Amino acid sequence: MKTVLNLSQQSVIAEIESVLDTYPYHPYQQAFAIPELRQELITFVFSRIPCCYSAIEPDRTCWLDYKLPRSPLEHQIHLQNLIHQGIYSIMQEKSDWISRHLCETVQPGCEPSHWFG
Image (cartoon, rainbow, N blue to C red; front, side, top):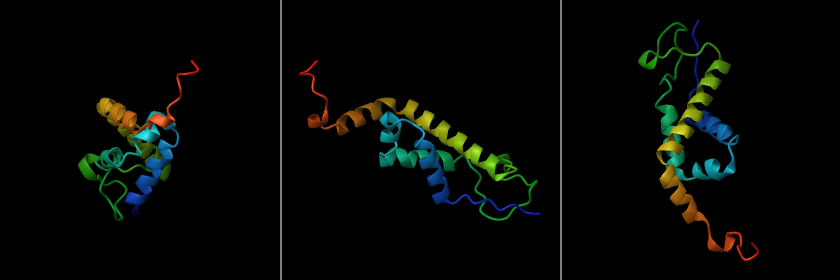
């Protein structure tokens, strides 16, 4: 019996979007709306999943001794964990850059007025 694992780019991107939807808009969704950071997250995830796009034997070891999950649910949980790790890693590594970039995108007319305070 063989297992077919669909790791298309679109399904991984959809999972990334689904996971990001669980995070607050600021700073997470806002930060990963930046194309460079979104691509970095996609690259982070793809560099940590097996490159198997065809039918394989269930007991066969894939990329770098990574064994395929036994069920689609297990695969989805693994993928979600990688996405969370990527979000945490990128936010931590690029926190200063993200802070500067997000501050630059705020338009002065949209900031709350301090006149009332």
